[in-house]
Length: 308
Image 1 (tube, rainbow, N blue to C red):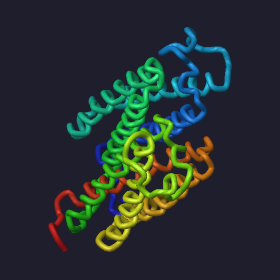
Image 2 (cartoon, helix red, strand yellow):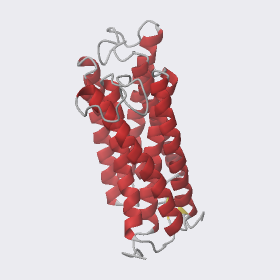
Image 3 (cartoon, rainbow, N blue to C red):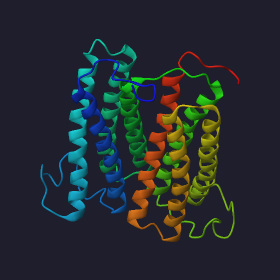
Image 4 (cartoon, one colour):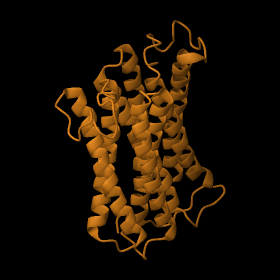
């Protein structure tokens, strides 16, 4: 037991949880690598799909191999995911709900493979690129949810339902902001406003076109920051569970870091390293929010109260 958590309640072999954890790190890295492909303008370095210049292994070129490695890692992740989810489905000790989520994970994976191909074949269409990112995040979240569910249960603790619901709502808020960021990037709208915090000297010059997209992304970012900080204070006041409190605190710190990274992106004119860092921190924020939501459901599946 650790902080009230019973580890591996479904008697899965140690290699399964270790492999699933490693897979999560791989998916996280793949999302960051995908961001690197975009900022290095390597998305069409291999103009065909699934081959690259008609070859299984193309001739070396930095941009070509950045995209090629991205594809190879994606293929390895796909094979590993299918193997793990099939094993999960065949394990009678695992709840049927988690097994169905494993099936959904494979469906998300298949959709992501198709979307990756369309991203190339449709010449980096902005909506397809954003959908590619969205599916990647959904795939990552489904794997993380399965991992957290298999990892263990926790001791009960009474807490107002609205507290847990705030954690769940935060997942959707952060997800929406990341997708907005993906649309900004795929529409090359990152530098349509070269000043900060205003845009062309105005707070809200327009909500239309690519300038409007940038303005909406900035405005919603303030809401995300306030939500993350407010969430931390709510959890600190109403929750005793240390893991939940630590995750909420880390999330609050990271939203401030992300705000700083976003501002640096504009003022430094989107240098590749900072642009990728922006995506990495966003993905970490989404994972932390999902952890908080899952922690609530693990801790309080029965003994919740409507008010306190």
